Every structure is written in structure tokens, then in C-alpha cells.
Image 1 (cartoon, each protein chain N blue to C red):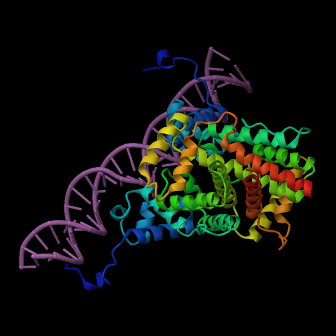
Image 2 (tube, helix red, strand yellow):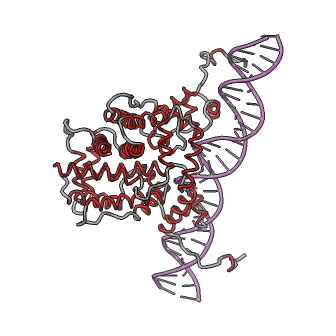
Length: 224
Length: 224
DNA sequence: CTCCTCACACATACGCCGTAAGCTTATGCC
DNA sequence: GGCATAAGCTTACGGCGTATGTGTGAGGAG
């Protein structure tokens, strides 16, 4: 009845917060955020659900934690460089990270409290504007405009039920077959725009709105 | 043992989908979307949870339903009028409706499938651009830029843990007292911008980004 | 080498949740 | 009055987050 050595195949690797968060990110990426439960996460780690509470304070803390894992993948704007390009870079990088982890953006908007890593990003973005000659007031508005575009566009994108361009075309075509074209002619046209083969010269949709905002901000700064 | 008349105080008002949805909206407005469960909704209506399934197909259908209640509050752009003003009107109206029902915007981004009422809004917005001389391609981008701003800004706003200007000031001041000002000088400045008494001449934050986008779109159209 | 300690994993239990399946009752039509 | 049917109720299942209490194994002290 004594513990058979074979029952302890190897020295047990102790859990820690990082391993817990990494496993949670893996589950959320694979099964969606709704598939992430304390019990499933425990199973994934070969552990009972309650054992996780030694490393995270609860489900909410777990969610904060996995958002921070994603935030750590984002490139911050670098000081001393051209502001427009740096803001563009960090916006695209944010968008990419949120799309890689499709659950993360909505979790970020839900969770209350701003984590340290998010504050570092904010500080870098605000500083980029200020040091490019934007007034405090215009910087304030610029930050919200950029942040809203990243969040809003990304949430639209990850809310769509397709991932590849092929799936998009399939879905859009079946959609076009089902809606009354005489009642919604402009929606039909809009769907066709989505289907149209991407012109390699044209930038991705996300960057269209982004540059619209950046150009507008530049003009406002120059007018100040 | 026969039913005492007093036990049937009045002729029972039968449930219907509209009453169910209205009660659900009331609960979500009062207690947040997390407080809305089939059991609580039944209790609110003096009915067992399972009875609700005679009027909604399930929780998901309930959520679609209450989102549609909110969407019905949004003013669509009117055809034949100045495009900029109409897009502005419907954007502000959307923002207002989503803020009145703070849960609605995130539910809209989550829910798969586009309801008829949403398609009518899309059609009206797309038509406004097209009939103002925007090309199909520019209309496509314009739609996403506007939609992203509405969604992104509103989600930021309803995610903040305050509703009144007073609560904002309290929170921002306690926040300012806690963060290291030497490490995050620009965040401090940003928070001060939020606290600064609103200049009555200045438009609300939401409309700043909105006009930035509208002006940019106008320039792009004129350049086409 | 032995023993103590304590971090950390485990087991059990509670009150929620959505909803499947089956039963009961009230209402409207003949 | 009799009956079909719509719409309510009851019970039950599996899953959830987590409070609480127990067991155990590795590492330091003697």
C-alpha cells in the first residue's frame, strides 16, 4: 500500500503562477474564453481545481493575469523616434496581439483596474504625443481616439465567425445568397467589398482607419 | 383544498416575449449583465425559470433579444439630408443608447449573427455615404471607421467604474494620490485632463474622435 | 539520521447556473 | 360539457466558482 515508485513517474514539477497563466492562455486560445474554467485548467495541469488557488487569487485574478500575458507581447512606442510611425507601430502590434489571442481584447475592456504593464503602455503612448509637440489637451483626445480604434476594430474583427480569408469568402457568399438584395443593396455591396480579392497595394482594413486618425491628429497639431 | 379565489388575486396576465425582454433589460440595467440569469428573470416575473422557455429559445436568444431592444432606441440617419450631420447624429445616438444600457455594447460585439434591425442600421449608414458621393471602397472603410469608434469609445467609457462626473473626480484624485508621479508623469497629466472642469465650449470626448474621423472622410471623398 | 514545520495538493460540499424531460392546469373552441 | 392545446410547474443533471478542512512530502534544525 506504500506508494509504488511507478505512481510517481518523475519528481513532481511544482506549479507556479507562470505555468498556471500559460496553461490558461493555451486553453483560451484553443477553446475560447468560455472554455476556460478552474476545473478544466486544473485538469490540463494534472491537478485539482482548488490547487490553483495557491497561485492565483481566483478566477478574476486569473483573467487579469492572462490579459497581462498578452499585453506583454505588445511593442511600445520608442522614445525619440518619429511619432506617427511609433504610434502606428504600437497600434498595429496591439491589434496583432489581440487577434492572436481573440479573447483578450474583450477581457481587457471588461476587467476593472489598470495593470502596471498597461500603464507603461499608456505612459509611452502619451509621452510620444507630448514629445512630438501635442498639447496636453490634444494628447488626451489623441490617446482616446487611437485606443478606441484599436479596441473597436479588433473587437469587430474577432467577433466575426471566420479566421482565414477562405472562410470569410465562403461565409460572405452564403450570406449574399440569403439576404434580400432589393431591400439591402448597400449591404450587398459592402459584403462584395469584403469578398473582393485584396489588392496587395492596399493596406489592411485596420490600418485604413488608423491612418485616417493619425493624419487628422497631425493636422490638428499643426493647427495648434 | 379547491383553489381559493384569493390565491388567484386577478386574472393571470400571460407572459409574452416582449414582457420577458423588458424585464431582462430592467434587471441588466439595474444589476449588470452578470446579474441576469434565467432564474432571477423568472423570479422578477413571478414565474419559474423554465416557463421562460415558452417565450425565448434560451439564454442566447434572450441576449439577442435585449440587444435588439437597445438597437431599437437608436436613431438611423435619414436619407436626403447632409451626410455628415446624419452620420454624426446616428453615432451620438448609438453611443447614448449603449451608455444608457451599459451591458449592451459588449453583448453586441460578442453575439454572433446580425439581426434584422442591425442590418437596417447598416444599410442606412452605408446608403448615407454612397449617396453623398463616396465610392464603394471608401464607403466600406468609412463604415468600419465609424463603427469602430462607436464601439471602442463606448466600451472604454462603460468599463470605467464611475457614472457621474463627481465619481470620476473622486476616483481620479484617489488614483493620482496612489501612482508614482515620477514614473508616470504623462498619465498624471492625462488624469488631470479628465478632472479638469469641462469647458462648456468643448464638445464631449466621444465627439472629438468622431469629428476627427468625419473630417478625414470628407477630405478623402473630396480627393477621390 | 530523526523530527518538525509548513507550503501546497487533495477531497468534500454549497449554492449558483442553463436547460432537458415530463407533468399539470387553465383557456378557448366545438 | 368535453377536449385540445398553450403555457405554466417540478424534478433532475452536469458544470461552475470557491469556502473549508485534511493529508503529505520536502527541507531545515537538532
